Figure 1 (cartoon, rainbow, N blue to C red):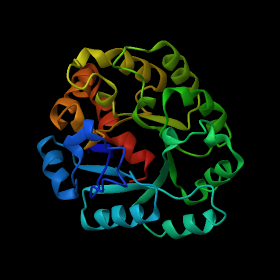
Figure 2: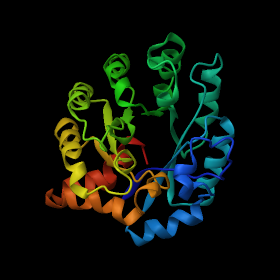
Figure 3: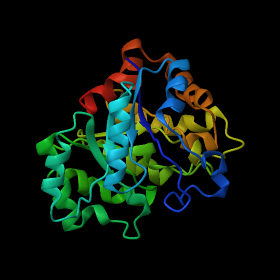
Length: 275
């Protein structure tokens, strides 16, 4: 089974979705399950994990409804206020939904770069494992330095780094990111999504080989049991259609064993999100 571990749906709202600026005009519209399913089928993908793009519980309602109506949506990564006083109550509520697999906070957008280390946030993270919820880590490279301390505090919590932590592929910056990725990969409760790479490259002029050094770092650090394929559709469309984006990793992993490819393209995701 092939699973896309990371994609989004939204009904575009220019105010709420202000991060989708005019430079990204191609995605300033609605993207819904009926738009993605034909694309997945055309590329041999059996299902997907839908990830939040708005930090409200209304977003959870929207994505859980999408998942309830579409069998190909295998799970949802939602949002809750991890710093709230009623976090235990909210997690207990969402544990009733089989397709709610975990949560994410847009840490990359926070002015406080080490928010994940603050007591209230830590308290919320500490409540996830009792409901078997995962946590997606969305950060910029300058926040990687905080992640070893963060994940070390929760050895029984499953974490995954989104978008290989967004290295500056456009300018081929790699040394500091490589060191930090290596430090995080030492913790066996942390996985990594190989996703979102094309948006960190030169949108108009990237070449498949631009990504090879970064893929080498992630695969060497995490091995083939803790990496997952993700498209980041429709955000990827600012730089590549689904076929071109998928082609980057298909070519890279072509020399790997059938077992390793099966793990990367679906089985690791199924295990991580308890599909």
